[in-house]
Image 1: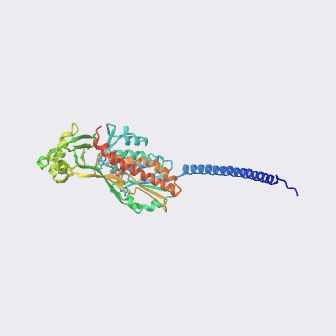
Image 2: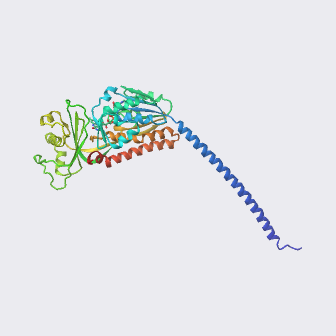
Length: 422
Ligand SMILES: Cc1cc2nc3c(=O)[nH]c(=O)nc-3n(C[C@H](O)[C@H](O)[C@H](O)COP(=O)(O)OP(=O)(O)OC[C@H]3O[C@@H](n4cnc5c(N)ncnc54)[C@H](O)[C@@H]3O)c2cc1C
């Protein structure tokens, strides 16, 4: 029997040919499957993006604002410009007369002015005055102006003046169809966030400075807005109270700011935290006479031209002031955002209800306005969020903004509103 010496090799060759044909078939099949999968995935992504865009376009949210102070009214204006907002409710416990008669002067810095202008606030048509790019007016005038804008809005707006928000109103919110965003702007005594279920915990941060405030109301004067005055590096001779000017030669001087209207004049004094004898005396010695003298002297030396001198007798009768230096602090609400799944409701806190200081700087309102600078983006995120992840994302966005704001106030707040010269 003859054997083919090449048979094994042939077999091997045939087997290899079969295998490679199989491989080519399999690769072609895999490639086909890959193309098919890619087409399906692309189709899915396209449909999803299209669906998301349509959903985002049609996503609608009802906004409820609690508190018609400067911050609440600005929040209404911001919400009215957002395409996702279908209706706005405003609860304010005071009537219009009380709101527009609020006497204290407020000052809007350049950043707030620029932001408010984008919302249609025309400072050139508002009673007030300009100085170094800061606009000074009365808080009542600003609120009156915003209310007039709000009454002209195209967005459906239900303004409930003279209506205090309380537990009973939660039923009203629950009866709103669809997603709701509640913005609590009820000031530093506000209870709304607590009523709505947010915790009342605050973090208090030190500005690393000491300060004192004084104010006088002169009923014979009108509410004429006056530009503020800042003076730096003041030293007081407290030797009569047992304190030498500076034993170590290292004392930092005080910054003084005089602000407010001609009727309500305020003074703030502050100094970076230090243990120099002058600061120590003003911090620890409770001597009303000493503090009154300091404020009277400051006022009479640095008042605006044409302002009446403050006499000792008037000061004794009418000047209200801190009897000693206290530590300056910023109080920041720990939880400024929440989502309640059962009611499909977001709650956020803004203005002095969210953060405020224990010291008037004359530019306090700007902190509240700065908080609102993220509101447009938050409304858009909150109205479109469907998944748990998207809801969390919206909440994280708001919480991050608040944290950054707080850090910025601690870093730059006093520098911007007190320490810097124009
Ligand atoms: C005496 C004084 C002098 C000041 N001087 C200056 C200054 O010179 N410059 C400056 O920039 N800032 C000044 N401020 C601070 C400034 O007024 C505040 O920063 C600003 O008003 C805070 O705005 P807001 O909207 O957060 O709160 P608020 O102005 O306090 O407004 C809160 C609103 O919520 C309403 N409200 C409360 N609870 C409810 C409820 N349950 N239901 C419905 N409505 C409710 C209140 O009626 C109020 O209208 C001063 C403040 C005071 C008190």
